[in-house]
Every structure is written in structure tokens, then in C-alpha cells.
Length: 144
Image (tube, rainbow, N blue to C red; front, side, top):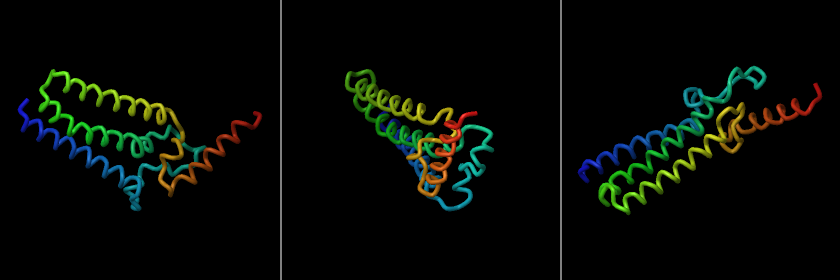
């Protein structure tokens, strides 16, 4: 791949990653109804499914943005080092191992959960979810 083409591809990938990170920031700190559409509005007893939209907005969108933002400079760097060389393979391998580890950790924290880990929630929603966690904990500890 030509170095100029790789640089342009890297810029495009990094720009998409930046856009996703800005979207994630809007989800987190936006005050409009559209920005907060992902938040579950029903009580935990009425929830019909896991916190899929919350995980998408608070975990997966920023993770994908981070991955693309970090992949942006890796693409031209690998091309500049020479595809198939030891240095390029090392950079590519390091990138893949670090990102794969981050994705696995995020997957374990967010899949099949009614409520995500509390540190993921923005301040305006954290107390509501904390009360729901306590409610679920109390409900489980009571004898049936």
C-alpha cells in the first residue's frame, strides 16, 4: 500500500473514531431527550430486556471509537515500517493484543446485565441505578 494512501486511510479511520467518541460524549453529557434516549426509563421490575441500549451508549460506542482512533496512526505506521517486517508485525501485534484485552474486559462487564457497573453511568443516572442495585440485592436476599 502506498504511504500516502495509508496516511489518508489512517486519517479517515481516526476521524470516524473521533466522531464516535464525540457521539459517546454527547450520550454521556448531553441534556436533551435525544442525547438520553438510550437510558431505560422503566422501573427495574418492568424492564423487559438487559441493559442493551445502555451498554451500546456507555460502553460499546466509546470502545469502538477508541479502537478506530488508535488504529488510525497504526495503519500508516505499519505501511511506513514495511508490511511484513519485524517492526510492523510488532506494532500490529501489540495493537491487537491491547485492544483485544480491552474488548474482552468490556464484554465481560456489559453482556447479560440488567444494570451495568455503576462507574459506567453518568452522574445524573448513577444514583438511580445504585438504588436499583440495592433493591435487587434486597429482593434476592429475602426468602421466597
